[in-house]
Picture 1 (cartoon, helix red, strand yellow):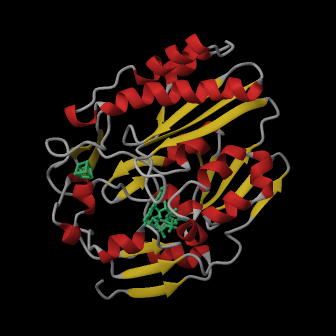
Picture 2: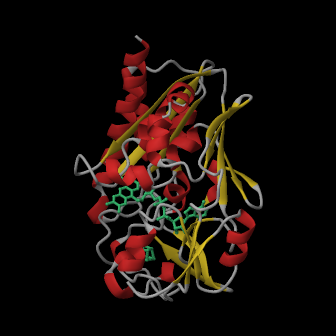
Length: 329
Ligand SMILES: Cc1cc2nc3c(=O)[nH]c(=O)nc-3n(C[C@H](O)[C@H](O)[C@H](O)COP(=O)(O)OP(=O)(O)OC[C@H]3O[C@@H](n4cnc5c(N)ncnc54)[C@H](O)[C@@H]3O)c2cc1C
Ligand code: SF4
């Protein structure tokens, strides 16, 4: 690791101000950032690391009227073990408890999980070996290279410089993102309130739409009295300490409105709108679950190396929908 300055922020204002300066980066649990610093993947090595964990009050989990509020600095273990989360948003507790490893979950945070950088191996290669588009470089090495874990729904276009557009095919594979999207969560930042589905984005050295100096402060989950069934599922090659290749969350209410969101298939969490439309107002049956799996994969344009993901989408969506009916019986 190279030398850098370190600030223990004591307020959000102090952290935001420090982060507006060139070469500053925020750290929460460090589960993602420390690896990136050690591996020296940054196009310009950070000058200052701004610690958010020293800001009091950002790690609480509480009920505020009809809203479950989770501080951005709550750890994944806090969420996984919270009786309140288990009662009000069970699939979030389930997903948080599946991320990384028990030890990492003790220190890594909800905010860090949602803001983590992509895992694309060109992007993560030691010593910034591949100066790819996502780092402000000219090209995407994965598009014509080893893309077995990359997007099956195309790349995201973004500006690497004013007027210069590039494409990135890395996926968002964070554990919590699909869950918070189907729960209709809102993300509070130091500047605004965003719907969960608007929070994720693709840009140079970022996986969110947060602006410079803007911080995620809390997640607000509205408790919908009509909510009826929900579930979370992940597929990973190893049983533990492995990112999901694909993860998905499903939610349904009493009027049979469905929400389905997948991670690991597109540059930002992917809402399976065609499957949701097919299911709308209908009771799930084995046949319908199968059709919904097919609909979720519609429009996929995989590379040769990641075509297996299309089959995974069909199977995982079908299985999760089937598990909802078996739970109901
Ligand atoms: C071995 C290993 C296995 C892993 N397995 C998984 C897995 O299975 N699933 C999974 O989802 N993740 C996994 N991770 C990734 C990561 O550790 C977690 O997602 C974790 O939740 C990151 O949280 P953190 O608090 O440590 O974030 P940090 O590393 O501190 O920060 C991550 C990024 O978010 C930014 N950031 C942090 N908090 C905020 C905030 N409040 N506002 C704005 N920006 C912020 C930081 O600047 C940084 O860019 C794994 C990591 C490792 C090392
Ligand atoms: S997929 Fe994105 S992160 Fe990976 S090499 Fe291409 S531009 Fe870089």
